[in-house]
Image (tube, rainbow over all chains, first blue to last red; front, side, top):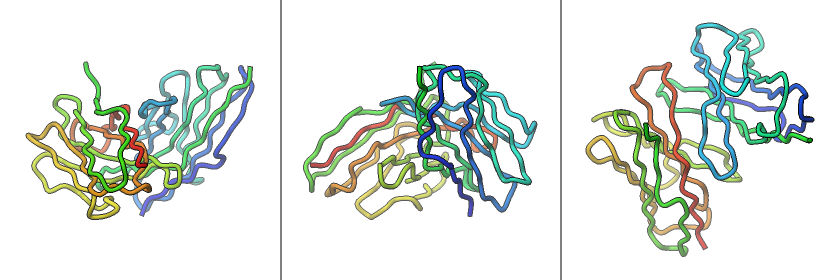
Length: 112
Length: 115
């Protein structure tokens, strides 16, 4: 069975600093992986997805993630944080029935 | 085009009452999912519809929960005899086809509060 672990329920960075949100997955088959963002009182918006093409995936709003099979990781990064990036971020793996299995989420706080 | 819509956006109900939550998927999307987001359990899958196939109900937490999808489009999630632990945000998502690389698009959710 697939699973996702997000290390750090809260991450705080200064505006302009590097953002790094960690995600590790467990899957017995080549995984399809997703990062979603959730702003307050809104649904989930797709940031980026890995579907076994390039291991470095670029998404919206300057985010990117690198798939590392040897580390079973799919960490999300952004070189320079903006205040508008403050939100909750969810990593997810798609199971064989196309359902999403989510991590517990990481709330990103951006300090001015 | 229009995204996934859900109604109502907020619902407050008394314990023991039945509630119905509605989801309008993106036009032409054949797959529809319901998830629940709660403080204690995070984001969890509830039920999945794909075309005319029998739904995957493996995530429904009890027999008080049911869902249907009429005409391959609109879906209704029904919770009977609501309990306080049913309080959560219920999210609906749709997907164009059952192709592995296609992502799910989420609606804004219905926040259910059971008093």
